[in-house]
Image (cartoon, rainbow, N blue to C red; front, side, top):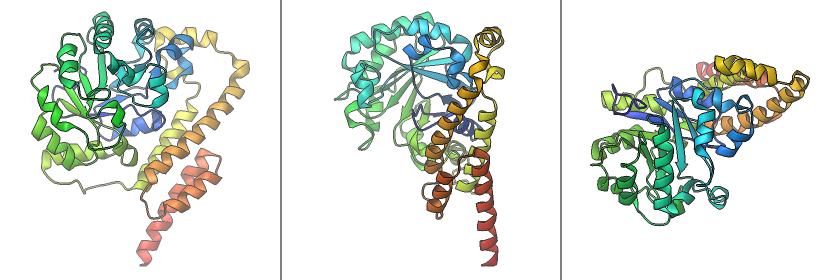
Length: 352
């Protein structure tokens, strides 16, 4: 199995690249809760080429980390990856995003419309960066063409292939077409299955029936960051994990603690690899520091609310917590409020 996946554990669990739904503090929670490999949200190759890297915080994360790139088939992926080689050990080409504006820009799943062009481009990129490139696809654009895709991708140098088991036109609706995996399971390249993996039971069924090299977990991890750990436990023990199980309030507190660490690290120079640190410091405009920081804080507060609301979904007192999070402008105040809510909830249970 490729060195980018775990050789000791063939049941690789990977967090999905959910643009607009994850950020660095949440991805850190995925890593802490059993995800073997962490995907960044997708980033456009032109953004990489046009900005200083320290202006894009996703390049400054530290675990088994995959940076996912997207763009049109004519964009210069090789130049973009060359620029960020020091920031991750794996670079994934997004050929599966079905979002309308991405398709309109000829990125993501648009590539699936011309398989010959897709294969030629991916072959070129993967041969340039042997051992570092992977790809994420769907089973086809508007109809299943998985066998054609996988048979051709096996002739490239991609290290592994992640398959969302729907067509692009299905978006995220309808049952995934898991049965199509049987057409391609004999190919030698490691393959990761993605799509509607929402419980340990579903994960076990997929591993036992189709024997993929791993599973990629998406939306289920936003509401329950411990799903990776819970799946691993279920696969090994054959029962659901109930010991030391955290509730949504614990996750929320952990998320805001990570968020505070993240904000306090701004502008992230301590996270930049040494060869680039001196260059970054020399180019940074200190006169803009305070204005940039305020802008960054405002963005992270808005981002944090969205993620917090996803984590708290389904919790009995979710509405009250949401209202308070909306009224607070300081991340420390939000964390303190949530901790106090946990204390009050515990007292209430004791009184009963």
